[in-house]
Length: 143
Length: 143
DNA sequence: CATACTGTAATCAATTCAGTTTCAGTTTGT
DNA sequence: ACAAACTGAAACTGAATTGATTACAGTATG
Image (tube, rainbow over all chains, first blue to last red; front, side, top):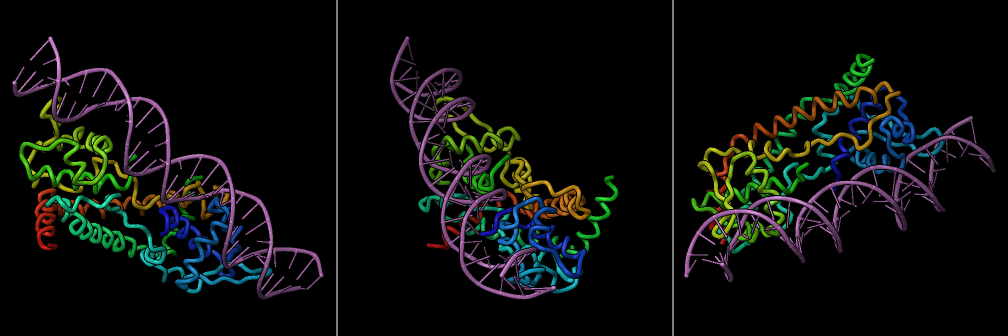
């Protein structure tokens, strides 16, 4: 269900929240991510459900991390968003009358799954803290 | 440039061509993949450019592999199609005034690149021959 | 009770994706 | 020579997706 851009947006938001224990409002985060606050809230909703961040309504409300940024791996974020598979299946189901076509979905799915695990394994090596530090120093260096 | 569905379509087509040394016409392949011949030709064009398959125009024309299916790794197919990154960057460029936002593209890009390499490494372990065999036996088993 | 937030539904425009039509060019068999 | 069976490519369409935006209800705070 989650579109491709959601992941980078989520990581960005989490890295931002890692900077401030008290958290930030959706519109503040949105201005850093350069998107609309309403849209961002839709994305952040997932992260709330999974428990990475918590939300406070009302005045002075906003979002903040529920645990240290070192404890949030990007693989968990990826999983939380229920991203579409990187290797999408054929748009239309193959012809079942064809000996190759009939078996393709099974084979392709197995490979797509393995690819997905490789992605998760790579993302598991990075935490939100890594991204936050990296982003800040990269930002400084680029000046 | 290549959309997500192109990869599975290409792999399917290649696996089909691995079945017959003389190759097949675009409409034959299209009926197995369950797509339109014209659209399929658009996808196959890439594989011709890279040299995995060759095309013959005119009557009795069509497509066929230029080398054994064991020698075509899925990673090469993936690269040939110049797929979009699995981890798409944020749709809009982050706010450069924000210390975190300004560094995000750099950091995210590095991680996205590493993920891409992990995908390629996984796909490198499979050849078109593997898929062709697997697809045929999976098709037989599912009956 | 005004202010500053979140939550959510609904709508919109732009883009993308794949399907389709059409036609020009090419090769082969008769 | 010509008809048949192909590929190549441009152009158009419809549907789906994506993210932006508006609007409004709900909620906590001072």
